[in-house]
Amino acid sequence: MNRYGIKLSTMDNLIVKGTWNTVKEKLKQAYGNLTDDDLKYEEGKDDELLGRLQQKTGKTKDDLRNWFKSNTVSGKEKSTL
Image (cartoon, rainbow, N blue to C red; front, side, top):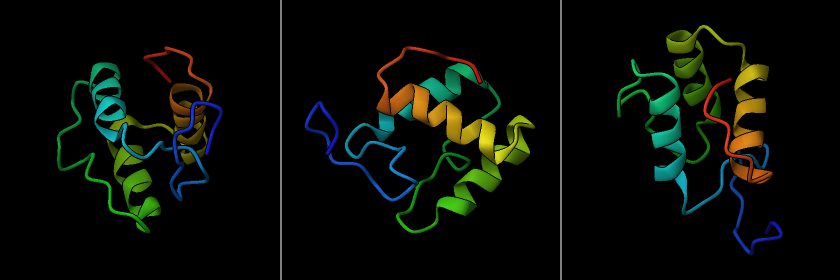
């Protein structure tokens, strides 16, 4: 759990369980071309999600991981990579 009492998932502890819908909306705001299918998250299939996001955004997996870290764990309100 993080300091807010939110349980963290498997994606290198970057996606906060229970707030995935909020994270999806932030991603859609940052990248208007993302669809619900692109943002489908299944536990244990982190690489598939990152691969889809990488194809749609043109960002590296490290860039995407950093985006998740800054937008979920640290509580910063950034909307772009």
